[in-house]
Image 1: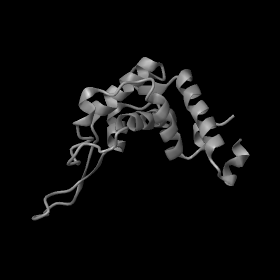
Image 2: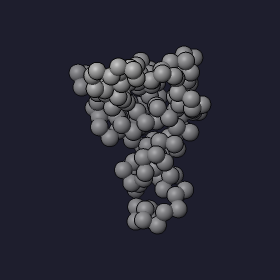
Image 3: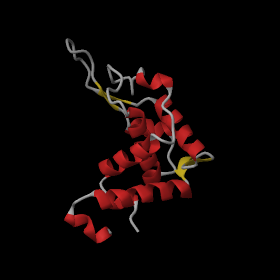
Length: 151
C-alpha cells in the first residue's frame, strides 16, 4: 500500500489540492489577504487556497499533533528592514494564522483533521485514507523507475 511518504511532496500536494477543490470552498477574502507580514502582495496563484490547504493537511499528517502557532512559524519567512538604512539583520516573521486556522477548520468539517485538547490538530483515519488514496493515484501517474518498488 502506498502512503504519503512514498511519493514526492509537490506531486502529492498538487493531487490533493485538485481533490479538495470539489470538497471545500475558498473564502471571499482569500484573494485579498497577504500570507504574512513579510509579504508585499497577496498570492498570485488562482488555486492558492486549495494548495495551502493540501499542504496543511500533509503537514498535520506528517508532524501531528501540531498547533496553529507552529504551523505559522513553518509558513513564515524572512522580514528584511528597509533598503536604504539596514541597521539590523533580517528577522523571521510568522505566516498568517487566520489562513491556517480557517483552512484547518474546513479540514475539520470534512472529517480529515480533529482537535486534540491542548496539543493542536491531528489527522483522522479518514484523512489518512484520503492522503493514501491520493498518493496511490500519484504513484500510478508518475513515470519514475526509482519509485516502482513502492507500487
